Length: 291
Ligand code: SF4
Image (cartoon, helix red, strand yellow):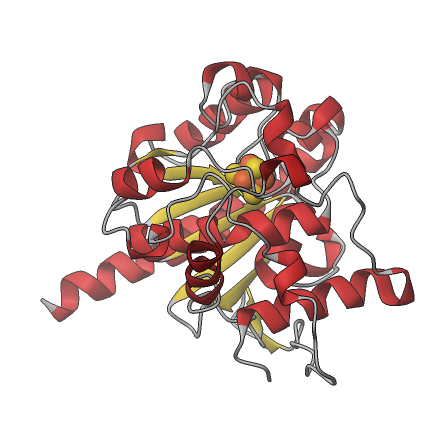
């Protein structure tokens, strides 16, 4: 298994696009925004390759049955696209990956113009919640309300997420909530893989700083971005997926916006959240027993 997150990401693109892999001009930084010093670019490129959760290789069902669902693909050939995927880190401090806390990270990346989505944002939507949360929720990207207010999950889908949290006995400020991409895709379209790959190093850094024990991927886009896979939700939900070399557990479930369109999925989502709470209580009990 490759241990280089950039190679993993490029391989993920290849898995998705195959021979059709290309970088559309709209996603590539325009020449009018290439003022970053080459040295800064090089440093940021180097650091953006240094840490990321590894793709998990096994998952467990609620009953504890081990089941192989995700297997990272071996990088089979040289991947010369890294410099194209991570070109000039426009608007990003060259030492962004050295940030020691979320506030420092925000200050270093919130003017990012690494992909074309910056042109559509009113606000950079960083994330919100407890910086030491045990549970982190990850969606795909900001919508119109989030873009306007600069906070993730504040529209109708956010209100539903708040209700789900309340039913789990959690407050919104006890968990951390973020998205895979920090700027709103136009028309609320799904972020492109190229946009995800450019933005997700910021999420990896957030995960590193928050160090949550559990990550809930809301929707297939977030789940596939985190797992570097191409799965349908039905293939990966309902399971506890070891993540980040087993440091964390990932649970994938439906995005609240999808639940608004398909209320029939609420029961499965609630089953997933019950699984999460069972595992969370077990983990907390273990922490208590070890003290
Ligand atoms: S979506 Fe992410 S990578 Fe693209 S401009 Fe916004 S912060 Fe930068």
